[in-house]
Length: 187
Image (cartoon, rainbow, N blue to C red):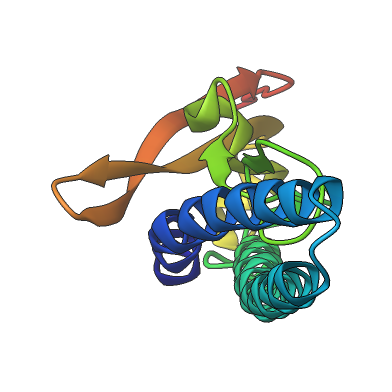
């Protein structure tokens, strides 16, 4: 996710340059039309179209990076969900809550092709990948004849991306467990 995100943000300089060139080309076309100068109109119109073609090509690259980032997020969420479902201990059964789909927390600054993308407000929270699960336990085996113990606890873990220098790294922003002591021990 961090590589496509950085790639998308790296394209902002090119998107900004094309937006400026587009505005200048449209202004030149407007001036040529106002002057009723056919050669200048043709030249300015061709320039507007060349810039528009570059914007559409850049927009396709931006959309590909966004799709890649979304795919990486979905795969990561699926792997987290699947790993919670695995039972590491014989007496512990975990059930993961289906995750809400994470999204790439960026937004375009303007409508149209090849916009400049910026991080959404509260990026750290909005970009978070959250996994919740509940684990239930029942004491089994030889001790179960003497001790009766059962209970459950809920857990939640959340990661987000933070930028350090020129790299994006994952940071744990939440790691909680809350016990529901329906546990009872009898001798």
